[in-house]
Image (cartoon, rainbow, N blue to C red; front, side, top):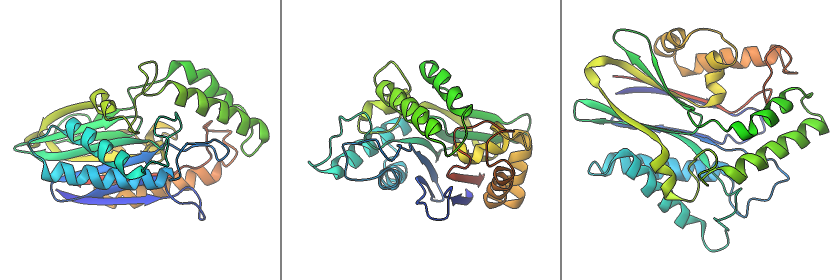
Length: 273
């Protein structure tokens, strides 16, 4: 694989909670699950720390343990990362650091892939329409709250309070069987990832995007997924993110395009097969 990747935090003074890395045989992309500043997490580490550690362990597993399925590699990486926390962290806390995961690796004559959470893997076929994989664990119980957040003005106390309520509702339900599954401290979450194989002969390439970068198509409708893949292949992930940022600046109050955050961490990766 020939891989290009780019990432950008949502603000100049912010630490990105995304993580992307690749080798010639495998790629990983993680989107850390942001926690409101006033919520306790039970952990002395942060979300960015968690995403980086999990991403590194997962990439190592993907390349070193070809005898393990991609879901088993994720489970192993979650367990290894949990062990790094130490006894001072409460890994049973519902707000313990967590992340969405996209991963893929070459496996014989196929691409083996995994998606857990609302980040996306987009297959770029030699013929036909792109195939978008991921964001298949919607949380209906929080949808009304999420839309209520969108109706408030960014930066206000009202929006902060509603976002906090939404975040708590999601965290109370995730990884319990009553809500979405996400990589956190429990290896069993990997069992709920969407996985599969695609023959390499059918692919031009593959893209991975956090939801901040996927706004190009999913929120702002700057183009179709075919357009997004063409942009990634010809101009690179940095250009796609730049176009997302340009639109965000024109709608800082989230009026034209309602959304929870005016801007978000954005990372994208494109691998040419």
